[in-house]
Image 1 (cartoon, rainbow, N blue to C red):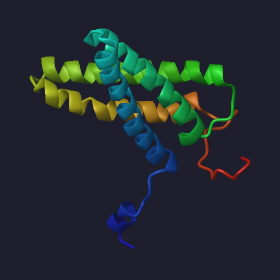
Image 2: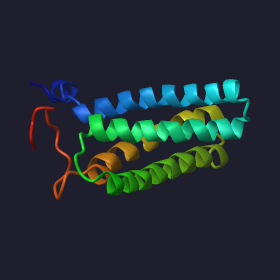
Image 3: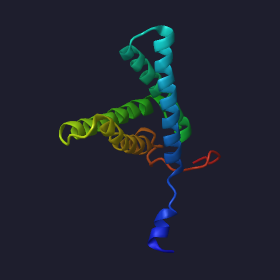
Length: 148
């Protein structure tokens, strides 16, 4: 097998695929909440945005804990670690966006898109290896039937 072919046949961890799917679902839930709160509740953009993100964070935590990483440890410590990871990932996202706009003169819309990869990478890695770690070892890929 050639080196290029071996690189192309490497599969991402199942938890990464699930994490990305949760991100899509979370985006749909968050945006739907924002739109519903604005439309039905008649609230302004800032409050609607806060409501959408609050609902989205809860949905994201529950899905990532239970499905993406299949975490079985205590909920509260995992939630606190997960919030720390979120803050770090969001800070990296915002720092990337603002640096690209103000230091490199990149269009704001493009800068926002370019801020997504560092956010996603940090959030995934922090969730997998810190927030939802299993016991004293790192979170392992396993099947739903696996007791490990």
